[in-house]
Image 1 (cartoon, rainbow, N blue to C red):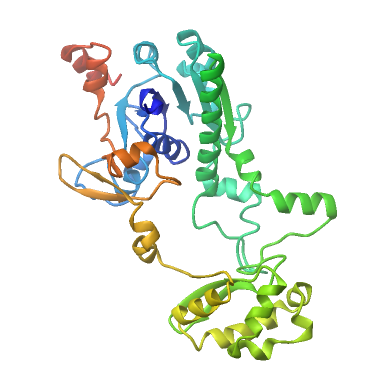
Image 2 (cartoon, one colour):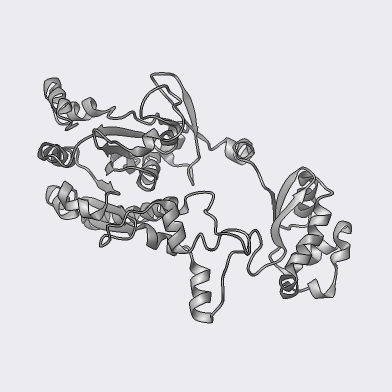
Length: 396
């Protein structure tokens, strides 16, 4: 029996950090219900192309919201708070999550103590930019800047750069996922719930394992180096006749294997025999390697390096990644029951039993307030006239 299917998640969510987390929980088979304000909703619904010809289901929103149900509810109104309390009690919510600013927790009635009074074993998660004592708003690039990630990204001597993916958002989601799994285990063992506060800033700084230790403990200066590595050479991007490869030489044995190749025999020099020598002359070394790799195709070079067990990979475009044989069989999909439109979704870190069982299909990302009648009517037994009145008052 898959116990995850028995779990209900109620999430007051918007943007990326929390929706990505609950998307992962939906991939486990949990029943995920996202809450949004009945007027403003999730701003990410309005981002990207209008691919369905409808409001509030733009392309950017579709990427990480499959597998969920969507409710609208105004938690600033007393009636909305009463409905919220009924949801927690009558749906037997296991996990409540929010990425509201901490100052809003008590005002909206979503703080841990209030929810614990409704359901003693609830697992409560609050994701914020800088922790529960700070009400400073934070977007992913701001956190990249403040956490040092941006200072380490970019060309040597060039401007700092943002990462290609929003690591503070996605990394915090993964850290939160791990904490939730620990809390679920603890609850299973002891019957106790949990109050979890996760800071996106702390999550981001935790990735600086090498820079912090070497800087604080040994006075090392760590700075951006473009595509090269701080401690190993040659490790970089190299041009080919039809694209680029990334070559990563991790030890002297691998280097000896490379210089036995006819194409690289001119680099068989005593000063390059050890990694320290290669690092000290890395710019000229890379220029020499580039002069060779430009004469061959990526496929030819990859075959050669693999034959001597030196790590190498083609730098693939996103369309090429999608067509990669290792990706083809793990992509997910969702079909819109209204329009028949099917979307392809990125694969999970691992294929969950729920996804295997469903044939890697998820339900289509929910429209704004799509499940109001189903949940409020079906679970809370609110009649259509009541729902209509609540809608007219902008409570739902």
